[in-house]
Image (cartoon, rainbow, N blue to C red; front, side, top):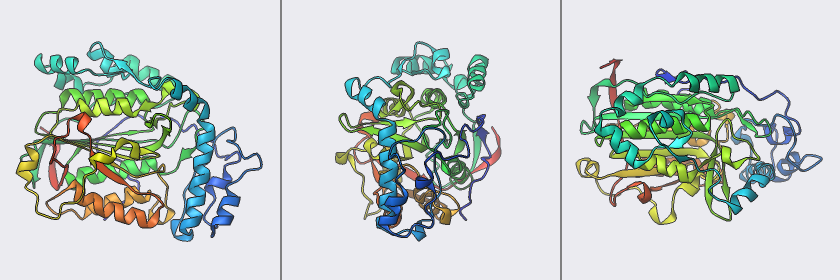
Length: 420
């Protein structure tokens, strides 16, 4: 059965103290919506006296979707979107002039990569794998200086080490050697003008628990992750994943897109609404995913404008004919599944999970043996589209190495409790 927010049973990075206050500072219009029953009242309730982004702590709280019509929900989400557009407008103008402002530099060495201020390069990856340092680097604790910096800034956890390899008890697809999942959820922001979310961390923890218990992933959870924590952890993953591995990266939190450039961004816990260099660009996300050497790589994003991660020309559809897993696993598959147009919307009727996360967990919890990602996604897309005015998307990333005819395979697997 689907479980609500649960503590992950694997590696959990240190979480910061919440920076969000209890006061909504003019944001009650965006959070207290359970009694709203029509589009007009929803829009009216979502308009403050100033009509602008309010100062102080803000929150996009839980919504009982069953109590709202689709028109009312559309109006509510539009108001949230306008709030964020106004809030992030200064940074957006900067990114229109210089789209590379948020991009991280290239790493010079492994210590540099571990700190998370840079993106690992193909050359560094090849060197680390050739001299045997890649695996040790992946599971080593974060440098003390990195930990101290994260704790002193109260901005979030440091980059996480990857879990130790565990023995496989039972696998539907034994051709896959190892499965690793990095699961990221951000509720709280050091910049309190960025609205906090009520369910992203809970979604991440519940999904990680399902990934491990039902699908046999070795999981690492990064709650309220900073930009450096995400980059540093994915650097480790890029350096250590092997060609017979299966990798999953899941993100729940705020995102944004610059209309003029069509470039998307994740807003991690240390994002500053006015400083785009603190955001994580889709450009860097693509580089990080592309450096992962596994034959199976999936990025799942429950984030505003996450659809910009999927190109229209690279959609993957459900397969109407049987799929040969051996043939699929001979190819490189890099796929992206996105929730659609809005940040995670917490549905009080689904134990506080977003409809996207809840329906994804529902489908994976029913998985028997294995199934192609396109078929799993099609059922998630249909279910979410009935509840929200957004269309989840699923497609390939040829820029990250996806080969034609490939797809991600979701597989039932059991692991032994202890490490090898």
